[in-house]
Amino acid sequence: MASYKLLIVLVLSLIVLLNPCFGLNEVVTKTCQQTRDPQFCLDMFKSDARSDAVRDANAQAKLALSIAIIKIQETLDTFPEVRDKLKDPVSQHRLDVCKSDYDGAYQGYTEAYFRVEIKAYWDAMMATANATKFVSDCENVFHSGSPITESPFAAVNQKLTRFAVIIYGIISVAA
Figure (cartoon, rainbow, N blue to C red):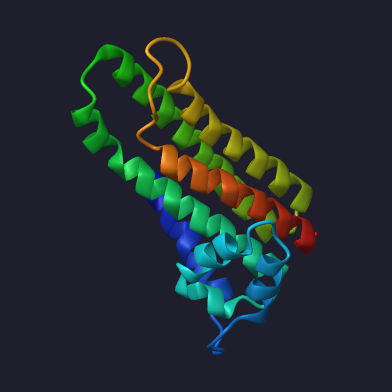
């Protein structure tokens, strides 16, 4: 079911963002230069070939949300492998909680995408904030109780949390 939703988001992104223009995209560059971390912002968009087709803040918001959705799905795909490595009951429980959190984040970012699609920007910002809270909850579950351990998803959690701030700002500009 999640793969089906991902496919819908990707197809919609391609339809909306296809543009015959190539080269440096001024919309993405200008937006990223206005963030607290311009290089991180540019790197996130450079990782997706569709960035060259962005023509306005609405399209950039949809692309940013699509990138976040893809990163979440990629992380969800690693859960079985991580589960095989973490054998103790506490880690297994934390992984279950984190999986649930990532499912919630996936749903939240997908909801935000569709809210941007219909130009319901306030709802998109709220859905983005809620999705980001799920990512934070996944990180925090490994830091609560005993033993405190590092999340196996710490790097991606940090990246998604940093990118959420940028997404929120792009949606604000689109509004």
